[in-house]
Amino acid sequence: MNTFNNLLAQLQGIVGAEQVLTEGDLTAYEQDWRKRERGKALAVVRPASTDEVAQVVKACAAAQVSLVPQGGNTGMVVGSIPDTTGTQVLLSLRRLNRVRAVDAANLTVTVEAGCVLQTLQEVCEKEGFLFPLSLAAEGSCTIGGNLATNAGGTQVVRYGNTRELCLSLEVVTAQGEVWSGLTGLRKDNTGYDLRHLFIGSEGTLGVITAATLRMYPLPASQLTAFAAVPSLEAAVQLLGLAHKYLNAGLTGFEVMGDFALSLVRKHFPQQTVPFAGLSPYCVVLENSDHESESHARAQFERLLEAALEDGCVLDAVVAENLAQARALWHIRESIPLAQAQEGLNIKHDISIAVSRIPAFVQETDALLEQHFPGVRLVNYGHLGDGNLHYNVQAPAGTDAQAFLRDQEGAINALVYAMVDRYNGSISAEHGIGSLKREKLAHHKSPVALNAMRAIKRALDPKNLMNPGRVLSIE
Ligand SMILES: Cc1cc2nc3c(=O)[nH]c(=O)nc-3n(C[C@H](O)[C@H](O)[C@H](O)COP(=O)(O)OP(=O)(O)OC[C@H]3O[C@@H](n4cnc5c(N)ncnc54)[C@H](O)[C@@H]3O)c2cc1C
Image (tube, rainbow, N blue to C red; front, side, top):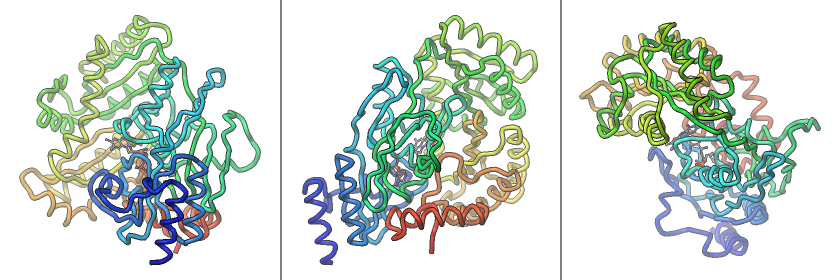
């Protein structure tokens, strides 16, 4: 008890007493976004500078107290909340939120970890640039969390994951030292690239405090189309045509199964979903053009004409203005919420080579329907990146809670076995956290797992950085 009290006094000395929270309503920090789990922190500590983060980490390391870094707490895999022991410090990075510099000539922005993604997008836009990371949680998630989970989102098909957008990092190590790697260099072959170790490490190797990220010129026009396609094979065929006709202009390609869209129609009847019930799948696609809107429209027309001729599109609409474009994207973004309103469900964030997705879905759908009669398959996602949110909803009219309790393990086993057969990944963009830790142990090669454990032991020998997340080192 004394150790904890001494530590709390030290932490108050570092960040100020009002930034060490131990009582009151800490739900926003202690409960995960999907409300699956709730932990209990020894304290929520809110530093405002890299130096304060370093001092906090040093104090915790000396007291052998583990730390859980947290940004916006929008993660999907229970990785950003403390465990239930009441002995972990929750390190909130949200006050570390300055945009430090915009370097127009270098096309980079240097930003602190707690900056909210949408704020960064807006700052870049004001300077005449695009920061292309885009996801439905952008109003709350932070750059540090995006880097720590290597977030994907809806523009990966053109700009890549957060990893591809990051040129350099500033990190506080598990020992409380500051690695100031913010060079903003595009070329730097001076040995191991440590940046890539910390990106995607989910807070288990160190605390990301700042990053230098790529910006892009703002496109002159962004057009959105919504197309009904006769099958998933046709959606893949359309993707190929979109790459050919739009080239680097293709900045979004999302697929939505008809059942997923029917949930949007049911729970958000105020939204107009085009082509209701016309086809088993619809696609929303985006063309960003650097010439003009008329050029973008002409390109889209050529693409859709070719697709109609090939039979891979049944019908399509192109948004006439920004409001229509937003409404079309809103349909896609509403699927997770509609699904939540329908009831508890089993989520899978998987990736498979794009070319193999139709066969994977056909085979896995059939197996699930055979072994779990009546299950409803909510299939949608970032088809342009080979990433599906392949979710399973309990049969209509049944007790969803009981269904999950009895069947979740078997359904996960079936889906992930199929993912393995197709040489895919059990976590495309959400990470591992504690939710998928045991699964990772089964689905990752032992050689890779041993290398990961060796890295963890080398960088965090006391196992104080978000212990128990991603992998166990015991
Ligand atoms: C509605 C909704 C839509 C979403 N859509 C997408 C999507 O399209 N694509 C996608 O990839 N994800 C998506 N997500 C998941 C989530 O938004 C991302 O994982 C996001 O990157 C998490 O950022 P955060 O700041 O909320 O991180 P948190 O949830 O706070 O933390 C996530 C992980 O990162 C670690 N961490 C956080 N900050 C730091 C730091 N500074 N240093 C070290 N470790 C840190 C935490 O310990 C934790 O392990 C979505 C979530 C929601 C709620």
